[in-house]
Every structure is written in C-alpha cells, then in structure tokens.
Image: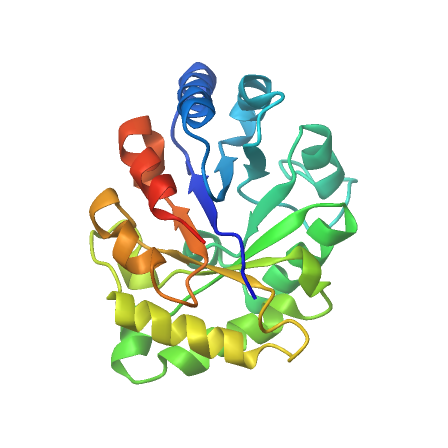
Amino acid sequence: MSRRPVVAGNFKMNLLAEEARALASSLRAALVAEPASCDVVLAPVYTSLHAVREALEGSSIALAAQDVHFEDGGAFTGAVGAPFLVDAGCTYVIVGHSERRQLFGERDADVQKKAQAAQRGGLVPIVCVGETLEEREAGRAEEVVLSQVKAGLEGLDLDRVLVAYEPVWAIGTGRTASPDDAQAMHAAIRGSLSAAFRDKVRILYGGSVKADNAAALLGRPDVDGALVGGASLKTESFLPIIRAAKH
C-alpha cells in the first residue's frame, strides 16, 4: 500500500509570531511554485498559531500544536485543550515528544490520555516514541519503543494517528540514526501494529534530520516522512527535506 509521506516542522520554543508568519509565507510560496509530493505540517509556538494560520490560509500546508492537555477545558491554568487548538486552526498535535517526557516528566499514561483527548477533539495526534542512549546501549531500544507505541496508541482510531520515532540521543545533538537503524526500528513498530493497520499507519523519523541526510532516511521503505526540529526554522534548510519526501 502506498502511504503519502508527511514532513512536519516542530518549531519548539523558537520564532516569534511575525518570524513564524514570514517562514510560513516563504514555504507557502515555494510550494505553490513547486508543489510537494508529501503532506506538510507546521507546529509553531502556541502564541504564533494565529499568525501562521493566517499565512497558510487556503494552502495545503496544515497547522499543528506542540502539545495538548488531556482535558477539554476547565480549571487547568496554563493548559490548552484540544477544542481550543481546533479553534486556533490546528488539525494535528504533537504528543509525547521526548522533551515533554524528559523535561516535564510525562509518562506513557500521560501520552495515552493526551492522544485520546486529541482524537476526541478532532485532532490527529503525532505520537512520539524513542529510546535514550543508555537504553540503546543496554540492548533495550526495541523493547522500550514498542512499549511506548503500545501505550500511546491504546484506545485510538489508527486511521487518524501518526507515529514519530525519535531516538532521544539524536534530538538536537547532530547525531542521527543510520538509515538502516531507522528502517529497522520503523519495521519493528509497523510489525507491532494490528494486521488491519500495518500498511496504513504512517511512521515518521525524527532526530537531527537535515537536508544532507533526508533522502537516505526517507528512502527507506518503512520511513514515511520526518518530524523536523532545528532544520525547520529556515526555508532554505526545511525545503530540501520536503523535496526529499516522495512516494
């Protein structure tokens, strides 16, 4: 089965509203001139969602948030529920990114609740999984990742979910899993899915994806796209990754 690739840019806590708007406008113009053969998603900071939404209005580029609360609304100061993200124009949301797990103490149970809340609210969750360097060196990488996949996808409609494999040791470090290592883990993730969805769920790779390694990574049969961090902050570094993603 042919799975349309997805390339998502996670701006993390970078780019003020007008900077994010300018980047979105630049990408939009480039993709009008030469349409992408993949789905493109941008995930700016909460405060930049409105500006990016305006810049993307009428284009094929989708808007995502970087996190979501597990409740739809209520007395949760500082949190943003799925209905508010939909109201802001989002169609996707990143859930369980390693920085949320490592820096904010999110557990598999939290990721599961957030992914379920995202779908309940009408969003497509991008469920992130990945092992630490210590876990990989101990020979536990696949065990850890598949455990995260099982928990993160529990109770979800697998027709409306993306998985992003991001080895923690490769995020923002300049280190990247080799294309063979990425393919092996993606194949393991795909093999863990039910037969009905094994060929349908799109699995992205994240972790220091750049223009010079994108083609090799995205050329592997079970790698269906990329979740891009630092390289998504400039058109000249992000666009080549989008171009590398083909059926």
